[in-house]
Image (spheres, rainbow, N blue to C red):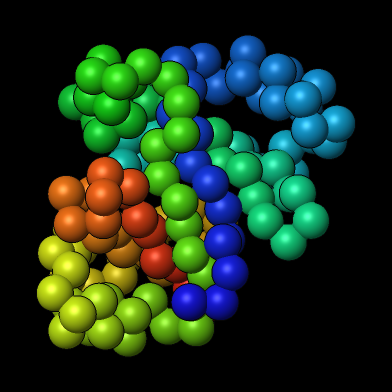
Amino acid sequence: MNKIEHIGIAVKDIHASNELFSKLLNTQPYKTEEVESEGVITSFFMIGETKIELLQATKPDSAIAKFIEKKGEGIHHIAFGVDNADFEIGRLQNEGFEMIHQHAKPGADNKMIAFAHPKCTNGVLTEVCSERP
Ligand code: ZN
């Protein structure tokens, strides 16, 4: 894994949180994007080489809605940047990690992404992401 690419934070109201994080981080989000397949709206802040991703649910049955219902707003996942997400999925499976996604799929911000199950990573929902070719 190359670096922490971003940290995902689950929020209830992305507009209010965009304002809050703009003040907190002293920078504006560089993009807001809906990922329909995931039922989320995301926004991204660049902090040095790392990003903060805010995620708001657009459907009551989306993973973010369920997360907030269970745990409230807060840190949702850590994403590691890798050269090739599909290769990394294979490596992690060989190491015994249970992947939520067996193949990388298109995510926000022009990435191919996959998640490892938090039950096999000490409760930390872990994403691997690489640039979309
Ligand atoms: Zn993410």
